[in-house]
Length: 442
Image 1: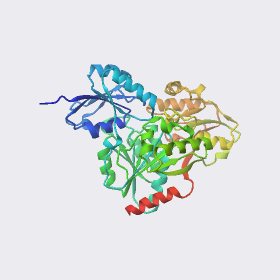
Image 2: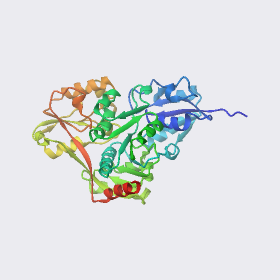
Image 3: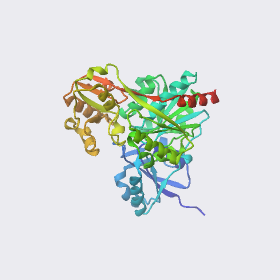
Image 4: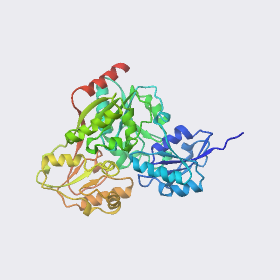
């Protein structure tokens, strides 16, 4: 008796969705993936997951539709199962999607990270978070420099952001800033890759994370998974670190899959304690202990600094922040605000009245945005609109906390003060954890 293959729709945002397909469905005789849907990130729908990635069972590739078509797709494609495959959603939103899917006649699946994690032959540390913008990359940078100081070769693998031609992004290796141009990276990609490159590390990304891992293993003694949003790692970690953010206290128990990665952690870092209140920190401590009392707890500052920061005292400034952090991450402010408050500008100029085009539409989509301008740039058009929007603001300085160097991408008609932010663990607990890990693998 030949069993009918189950029709599957994968709901995603150009990252976890492709990984879930590659690992679980690409070569499965029991399932037929009829389509992907795309959400959260602009310009990633109406594409094709190409044959070079989809494999022998999908000779024509797989179409990617906008998630707004989900209900119709379930009916028209006779989908049996919808697989939730993107991150940083409040629980209410996850269940709304489940209700829509169930009402349309399909099952709604949330996959266990255990079923999609690939095992490395090299020691691997995973860095995850309970929300977008908690400080994962700060932690990854801190760990990578500590391990290098102990004589270990470190290679980082970053959560995927394949927003261009997928057939050209199967495996991407970044060693120099020129590689950012080679792969036509967006601002969002540059924000995560550029600091590691400037620190002298090789970083991989792309679409096929089995191939990526095997290439990275050839030049590493230890691999660091630098996660995206609040997603679970794609690889089986030997040490898992999850970062929590007291500036969004309570979110550690109300976002998918942030609570999952908090429960999975060996080490829980409460970051930004220098910017949070004692009440906020206590709330996060209590929440984390209630779900993972066995994890080691580390407290850390997120130190914001900039060369020549005293120049903004008494001046009018525009604040530019890391895009995902203050858009779908929902942060009220970022490192540019923290730095500016320390140096007492005469005025923080409200960004909202001066934005145009795609940037204006971003403000409309996220109505909480007002003073800070998110450095969004998923397309050349968005980057042009970002340039125009910044240049229209009547200010003396741009205080930019996007980790990428905007001057390499746009021409701005006023000086830019570049803000950096690094992890400052309190006490020596985190250093001891890293040292103990290194000693076990050396």
